[in-house]
Length: 254
Ligand code: GRF
Image (cartoon, rainbow, N blue to C red):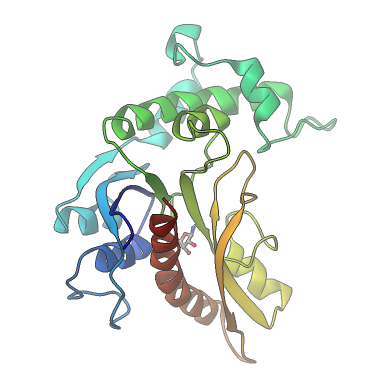
């Protein structure tokens, strides 16, 4: 039998994946999102954090008696636009080291992404990430699960969770069959390309965007006449099966 792992979760919105994980982590299947019997997984959810107040996913967590917190990214980034002093940055923030490691943004000659913008991006995100870490590190978690968390995480954050070299501890779900269609609109990109098969991917988080090692994937057929809404519905149903299964696989590996 696998050990029961302690899991933290981060969300940004509706939290249907979070609900599927909650349903699988508790033996009760009442309120199960898919309506089908979910296999019990060896996971205990300690908290749900959000980058936005008032989202439905927070309600789902509270209903399941899971601790919640919010780090309001939009507000933090707005405040940073008035200027970032060194004193605002986490004391252990090292811009040079993070610039060297990060694979999220590249500087280009047209200055669409100028060095100044990259610096602002990394500094403002580190300020928000330090606030996330202040909540998260108060718990002893084995795994952090991003369940529709719509923010990229920089090396500043990742290095403070992945403290054992070579051991990944952050998982993400992406709405496409990676490495195709990384980015924010996987189902939309799959649909608009005219793919006949769509899918979802659970992967570990590394320094790039949607680039980390793949843990599991599920696919579905896209039939003639399917709309984008059909693709999203089919995809989400697969996500609700896949994410708990990947968390269980992790639990069995520790
Ligand atoms: C999912 O499609 C997931 O793949 C993507 O964001 C969506 C979150 O949905 N990262 P929900 O909040 O779990 O309902």
